[in-house]
Length: 118
Image 1: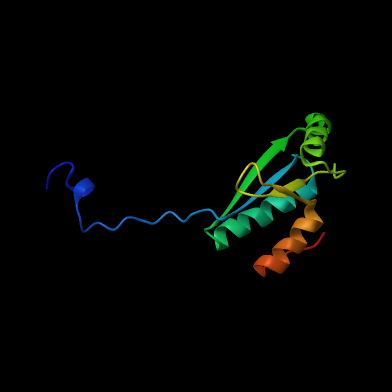
Image 2: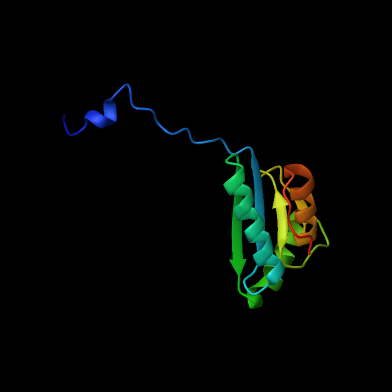
């Protein structure tokens, strides 16, 4: 068997990489328990549904105030607490979900997963 035979073998089955059709974005500060809970729910979602992508951006608490203001302006919302969760795979078409409780309710209703609401 040649060195590159495995690469060109027509009988080799490649793993399909699922297309990400639903994207969630979780931003918050590191010591926030609601942020930690949201990240855990996001991990569970991606483990159960390969078409879901969850991006996480963590900040130290001292940076959160400024980032929260940026997100409020970007999404034209009054939500300011950690976590700040929004959805959408297309950067020009993203919408705010809200905080952890809003995210948990969405996951429970949309994905039929049992998650704590607070």
